[in-house]
Image (cartoon, rainbow, N blue to C red; front, side):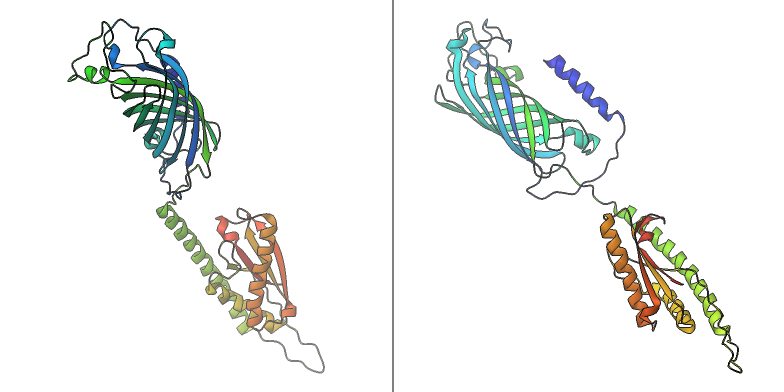
Length: 389
């Protein structure tokens, strides 16, 4: 069993050969990261009454082992630390002979356990990890129903979880527990037995009743079982500053274009009309001007964007020209139908500003272009453009 477990463990660790990003996670609500477990248990028993006698100490002997089960409920408070309450029983052995019928007894233990997910604590949290190594320490109460006795219990163990999906995992739980010497219902020494010196570690263990459990079962995660990455504030600041710099550069280009258009308008002179002749009006041509929006919003993000729009409005009024307003959304956020409606609202928001600037509503044409991915970074696509038709 030990060799098989070691082989499985080594094979499972191979999945960590590829380095994974380490990052912090945010704490979930109290009702998140709960789990329940059910296991089939094989248990071997040793009693202080048989210390150093001639009974075989092998856990595979029928007079020493029995089948049972365990159930547990627990919660992870962080990816690395959790608590578990576990019930284990119910068919045991009180080793007073090498006859398993004579040794039959019934018992149960109730333990509170502190668990440490070493995989997450050492390698960093990874929701796609297939195997988690989880040592734990426990303290609890044991009752031997056949001999009407109670005893405190202390234990250590290793829980191995092999993930199937975010809801289910297979368990391999190996644990070792110590009880008071009277927990199995007998304290008298058997023939040929004599105690060790209790001042030694070996004697401390051997002079207590004890058992070894190997359990196989399943874990079911209740509710949210994963952890969200904590935003990297510095990275966000750097990205935001980069976007601000790009917008400032774009605004500077727009202001330069506005100055050029203003100069055309101010220096343009229409020829006088003589003898019923027609007035000749020069057509003003402009490049599109962008007005930007925050994610998911149809409210203009900055009133500074309207400086360039005002220039186009003046040109349109001077020439009784039509204006085309096109609304856009970024295709990376939101579904297509939502982006279509959002782009329409953005175009209408800019059109409303043009009306405030004195442009005849009949001369404004709104077009919804939906979600696009034409500009980089993607946030630049959250905009509306304004141009003379």
